[in-house]
Image 1 (cartoon, helix red, strand yellow):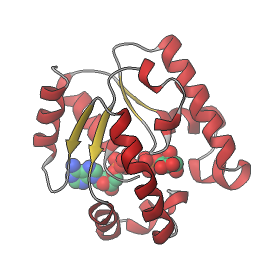
Image 2: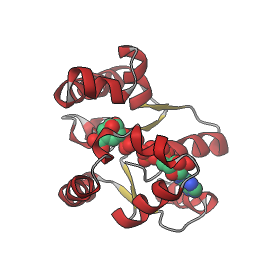
Image 3: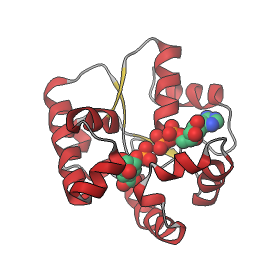
Length: 160
Ligand SMILES: Nc1ncnc2c1ncn2[C@@H]1O[C@H](COP(=O)(O)OP(=O)(O)O)[C@@H](O)[C@H]1O
Ligand SMILES: O=C(O)C1=C[C@@H](OP(=O)(O)O)[C@@H](O)[C@H](O)C1
């Protein structure tokens, strides 16, 4: 949540001339609702089902594409069948601080239902930290780094 998956994926796609898709965008489009509204109206469990359906579609239909995802997507059953898993890593405090001090920070926090309560968000981060590292093929620490450096590190570690 807020580490920069979407932004980095878009920058990477531009730099390396590949196509990229985002699982949250795909879900919003299919459901014709913003993520926030899906959580409000149908609940988190339903959203997780949407993520699994998206993962199933990716496994069946998508190749040669950079995919960014939501922070909970790592839980889909077939994650390791989808491709190289890149973890963008940063501390909770750093992520929270960047979101908090961003230009339209209210909006950025509001669109993330699981980031509404800072204590709960930190707890979730703590619970996921180990699991993220376990599923990742490649880990790139992004804290305090310029985008150019992040992109180079991803490309090098993924041998692109
Ligand atoms: N490398 C970066 N440098 C500066 N700001 C960034 C960078 N990556 C992301 N951001 C900012 O951080 C916020 C969260 O990024 P986003 O890509 O939406 O994260 P995620 O997809 O992981 O939730 C956005 O406001 C974005 O503009
Ligand atoms: O961490 C999570 O469980 C979620 C992260 C969000 O995406 P970002 O990681 O882009 O904020 C979005 O998928 C949804 O609000 C749930």
